[in-house]
Image 1 (tube, helix red, strand yellow):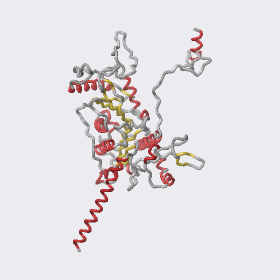
Image 2 (cartoon, one colour):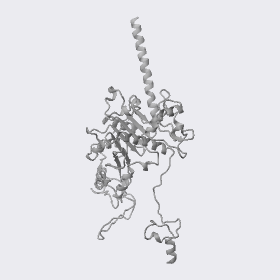
Image 3 (tube, helix red, strand yellow):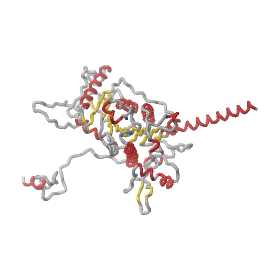
Image 4 (cartoon, helix red, strand yellow):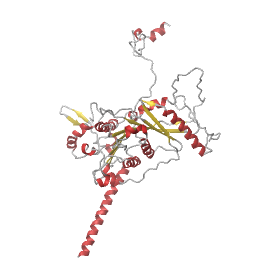
Length: 460
């Protein structure tokens, strides 16, 4: 007992000022600990991507909640059907007459028997202009077996959530239209990465359908998605799954003894029932005094992905990079009509500037070669705009590619830059598609020249 007493009071106490903590006189740097799964991997582009998101937040802070709809989206981990929905069961306060019984196995009922929840977290901008982490939440649940997580699904979910009464104050303006400036932060997965063509096509649809002045889609660097605002909504949602087993055979079993599907129609009905049960559970959740709206999207509803991208239109309205997609209205009324806000008067350059790492030295402010050294900073959006002339003068050009200081992209800048107009693209495929407009323009000029020559010959 004496040995236990000595060891126990040699450990660091939880709270030194507590009654028990005062008994710890001679302590060592030892404490009872458990493993935590909160280790975030580092990435070379982490600070660069975060700087672009910070610029977008500064823009949101400038225009405020009346003009900006700030949305954070991500797919939650798949929820199994027929098994405890949460791997770690939280303790429940209940009467001893009730007994919790779980299956004596932890293997899946059948392959791909899971549900995919897509979570959309609106972030309210307060009166001081700070982008918060609180706001209403919308969750679209789909079958992981019958549906795929694609950019078109996120586009359709956006159109669905802006019509919800719970999102009216955060998504719509005084005229009941979607606010003129929309900022969306994503995790950078293949279904929502800003540099992919399908994401571009779906984002253009959102921009045109809702008549926006500006749409910004931004992603963190790989391994940094935990910093996305929507991740703060995941913990309460996971807690509600404790002790929950979603039914996989509500309308009867659709599986044979080997776990193979024998009735595909019944399978879809059972998946839908499981999704509706999950939606009912999450719909009762309240996060930071804001509601959670959940719906099951049937697999019979198939989102159509746009395959055609007008490169001429993109050349005037789109700036696409590794972690950022910007779509902004132009000043031609024949093309985009009138501006809904005074965005173009305040933000005359229309697009966010590329982040540039800076360092303070005895000489003054200098451009850093990279952001890996201590003391390097990117500054705010307004500092970046103020320093634009200095940066262009130091680099020796009027404009620089958005990813000019992106560490992992530096060696690929030349391959992704159009040789005609010097415009940068996040993929070689996008650059090749863009180059077609130069070939088409050349053909049109040659055709016009030939037509003029023929007219001159006829007159002679």
